[in-house]
Length: 385
Image 1: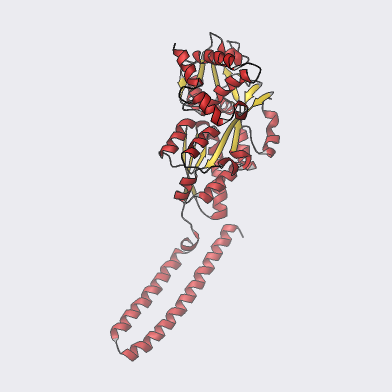
Image 2: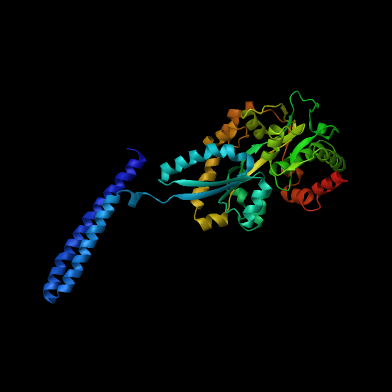
């Protein structure tokens, strides 16, 4: 007998036992009422109790007709997921698997309300209350930290999930046109005068922050000083006529509208473009940044929505072998050790892989590079001069 059949049988048995018990109680009441009526000789009381008995029996009949639904069917539950633009393809595969698992184990339907966009924009909307996310899966820990600072997520969120809250990984890749006519081989080549780069805006997009850090770290973590890094990165952004709001929009400009000579994007996003027929050569530089995508439960919202249990279950499921294989199919670098070993040969090797910690950590990165008047604003000002 399956779990669902077993639950149905238990519900049926409960209904039958309840009916027997209630009928016996009503029989006792009816007999007692007859004695009371004879003693009081009040016909109205007889009529009243008779109506009560009839009403109770009628209610039991209705409950019997409704069968298992009255006893075994919990209400549907809604779970609100807010994520960055390029994760949709992965979640489209993972969410149905979780829904089926939860239904089998809890006999409850989970209805997902999903939103995708630039990580910075999504973060701002969650903080402003425009999106009442139960779970956020964002492009970088900095965005989760901002939600925490706004009082929506409890401190220590990274310690409440495996892998410090990182659920998917990637690296930066450089896409060129067919035949690589501009001869792009590494990060340094992006500063050439005749190269046009398509990139996103760090003020709204997670990939834009990662690519900025990749460019900066390619200098400072290979022996160059910060003056050299600033000069280099200014030249690169002068080659960038448009800054899109997110990675998906940058991909559309490059692949669909044929703009630019070079695109920097997530390795996994480029692989997804290939599957849709937009196959172009790309380079994964041997000096690269580990792009770490966090997941977190938005504590204030799950407590208001009473969805903590199912939200925690979904976050745990994202780390499962089953879910991580779906990430890997879309060229995310998995965080589950089993899946990592299964797919390690599918990814280009990176000789020097640095992290946000190698650049000082997120608090310093935000203040130094992306706060008002920071390095990025200085680069943009120099670009206009």
